[in-house]
Length: 344
Image 1 (cartoon, rainbow, N blue to C red):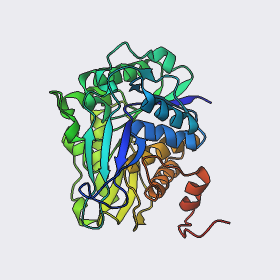
Image 2 (tube, rainbow, N blue to C red):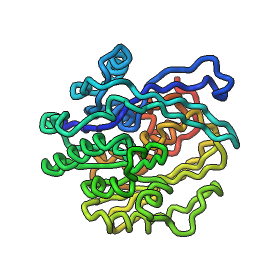
Image 3 (cartoon, rainbow, N blue to C red):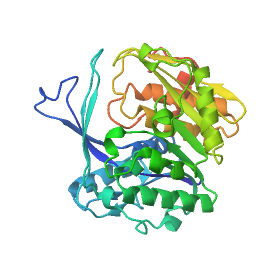
Image 4 (cartoon, helix red, strand yellow):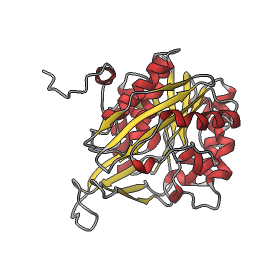
């Protein structure tokens, strides 16, 4: 079975216990996470061969991270070693009307000093069918953006499907270029484009008509225009997907998604997630589920979309960045069983 490659930064995650604020915390819960690594973990967990590419410093923390990824069945053989440090992000989990907060400490991380020519993409792409990246990676540094573009172009040459999650993070674009300047050239090489209700507007000035995400209610049909505009601008794209999150409060979100194939708009069921344990990594779990669905249920975009939405719904019940659910659990929710009854 051919592999799926993801490329990006993975960080040390330091979270306050429970719902404590930063000012209260006397200790932090340590784990690892990062957009593309989260996708690789999801895919490996579903039984698909997944390979993660990044650059890490040569120290014990990196060794621990690699060991964890290997234990989760992710291929770490293409990870580069070098650079100064592992990036960190601090998380304060919000509740009800108090939003969660993230503080990044990732300046001078190893991947920020990556440069073209360091990754042997020909070797990385041996026996590969899919390449995935997110908009977080080119936001890190010019070098990271250049290497990402290098990978996209090589994947295009080899006929490998390329997907991206637009993932706009305004606080990361600090090296002198904006997302609007850098992203178009990268997205132009993508076959599958994923975004949320804000990404397309913030990066490309594309927005849905008549949608107010702060009201806690979104209409899926209002996003068909966003998908059409994305596909008209990026003509290589065969599918555009929008995740639909309605934020009632920090603990209660509605969650759905739409997929447009250029002709037909597919809409997923809407889930009411009334008790969110951890929403960080929710979009990555959707992407991991989507890739799995498109590969496994080839030709059935509705089922692929439904799998992605259900998988991500379940991720909101799991602490940490990774989505640690099985295919059987996702398909159970897809079938309509959301009872949460004890499985004996």
